[in-house]
Image 1: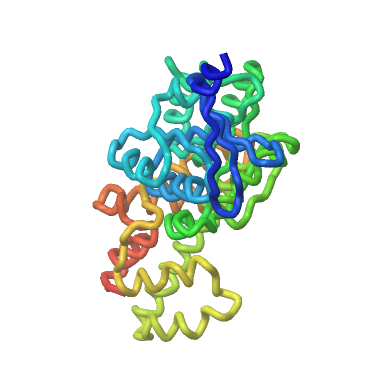
Image 2: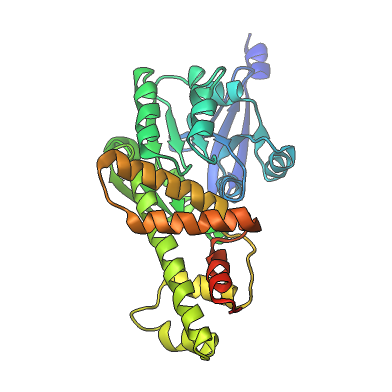
Length: 331
């Protein structure tokens, strides 16, 4: 009997990032435990796009066990090379302590979690769903209500920072959800970001993200308008940038986007089409709560113009193209 037990339960000691982990492997499941006895969580991760892939890699890098899923096999293969393993939605729901999604919008999150054969149908009571997608906060609360009936916790935790910060692990998280749930799982988020802030109850994270996206879009629009004015008046845009970037008009948006505008570099850090999606959510949210957002409506129309004229996949700094067209001048 002891011999059989030894075959069924093999114990492997590994050193990983100065942490000794005891890995108990049985035929039924995998459980990671630290020497102190704390459970090392298994994380299901769905959505390995421009943001999700590097963030999932960062979790692998610090030793978490990931089960990953994405429509694009090459993205899954890349994560498997980084130490994750692939799995379908049933496997992710059944085996994971925490499920993370990074998907385009509300319909995709609802389908993956609540649709036919969705992950929520396989998750255990006491597990947690963390949605890092940028979606309408009304939908976040709806999904959370459905999961609560199943005994599953939820945090909405959209991010800001774009692909470069996703790669180097310095994105900013805006989190909504129960405070105890936040405290329990925030360490996972800190492995992918440098800032993790609880903004309120479920839905508050995505509301904060919508505010962020309005401000970013407004900054890019204002910068575009101002620099086209300077160019049209015969002043070198590079000189204008050097003169004002250290003053009150200076901003992270200006520092990141003006050099791209000057060089006509529209390689996407954040695509126009994704910003259109976020501003649509902002407008829907504003209408549902009675907020007035006229500037957001105007910027949305500018971005829709860009989409219709071939810039949908360009970086949102391509707003400069709209002003160049109106002024009949290149920055």
